[in-house]
Amino acid sequence: MTDNYDFLFKFLVIGSAGTGKSCLLYQFIENKFKKDSTHTIGVEFGSKFVNIGGQKVKLQIWDTAGQERFRSVTRSYYRGAAGALLVYDISSRETYNALAKWLSDARTLASSNIVVVLVGNKKDLESEREVTFLEASRFAQDNDLLFLETSALTGENVEETFLKCARIILSKIETGELDPERMGSGIQYGSQRPRSLSTNNRINSSCNC
Ligand SMILES: Nc1nc2c(ncn2[C@@H]2O[C@H](COP(=O)(O)OP(=O)(O)OP(=O)(O)O)[C@@H](O)[C@H]2O)c(=O)[nH]1
Ligand SMILES: [Mg+2]
Image 1 (cartoon, protein in one colour):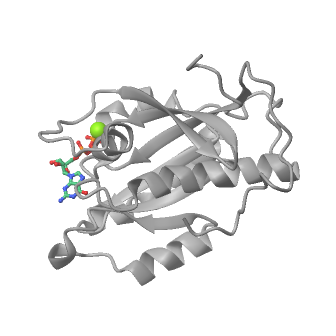
Image 2: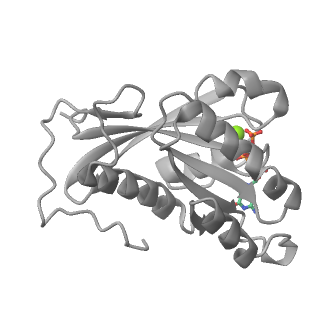
């Protein structure tokens, strides 16, 4: 059965309008660039199965609108998310400057344990870059975030970003830092009994991929 999985993780994609959130999700699910992407109205949804360390994980991903007028609607979807991709556009300082606000919303409304990956999208627009890799790395370090630069256009690092977030969540389940049974954890067991995370299947949380 295709719907059998060991774990389900709820993910959010958040960040300012036009940073490429919907294109990132589309590239992850369809393996191609979404041409003529228009502003998301409220929230869209996608899902994909991934295999991590022998565990079949269903990622349930909520792609939120970045436009301010949808803020109250999108915030109502934050509750109980296990992971989030916090997206800015490397060619727009304005979207980078808004990160603190998005992060505070995620930590307050989703969960203080939420695993957040900072995503500098539009890496292909090198000649228009307004935010350096180093600057964003420091922000990530100061705020305890993972960090990658991606291009939804070329596909560079897109899958890695989602997998990285899922990998960290699995490793936190393994160490007991995250409890899937806790209400609002954003994690569910699937109908397949979860296999124990044996040494062979152990998730390498220090993996850079
Ligand atoms: N060059 C380049 N353009 C991109 C990339 N990702 C998205 N875009 C473009 O950026 C624009 C906005 O992309 P969307 O994915 O709709 O942005 P969004 O973050 O979902 O915007 P909202 O839904 O309004 O929050 C579109 O014109 C895309 O073609 C990328 O990696 N590189
Ligand atoms: Mg969108």
